[in-house]
Image (cartoon, rainbow, N blue to C red):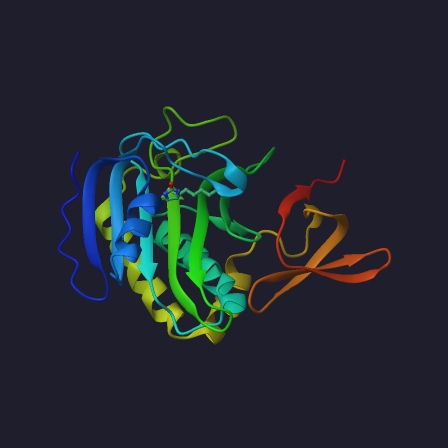
Length: 244
Ligand code: BTN
């Protein structure tokens, strides 16, 4: 069903009942010169995930892409993805769901046997060497349980009701404060982190790093204590290793 938004600043909302992908639509808006727009859809028919994966996006979810033009060098842009993860975790928390961040930017709901994936973030950007031109931060939060892939969960599995309008509003308000205050992002991220203190295996394009995740550093690198010392990982796929 349609979501009614009365959100004023800081983002204009463009709502669609159905879209192939809110990220694709936000990129179109970027090409037209727009900024500070949030594209929201009830359903996506061609949702996209990280690493060229798809993203299953049935009706009734929160499928959202935020287009902005931050004054940042491209190397610092990952801080916005972390900011979005914090904003989504806090919106989920307010909705009564204990969402934690798995590095770099998945939201999981911890369970006794396994952690289930509640949300994911796909950031795309364009820019020059020294300055970002635009960034699209795409955030997908599962709401209903039906139609989700194995290992995924929705907000409604953990709380009775969710007002998606309020959820999106809170998320955007928090994202807006954090994008203007990058120094506040790391401490907030640490507060909601599931990864820190855990044994992890991180796969990068060239390496596999196993050890204890001890910290995250600006603009988003994971610090892993391995048998051979501390390693900083900028990007990769992280798996939490449970004790046998
Ligand atoms: C991941 O692989 O974990 C990231 C998933 C990102 C999904 C969101 S849903 C809204 C936006 N539009 C897309 O096509 N993808 C992102």
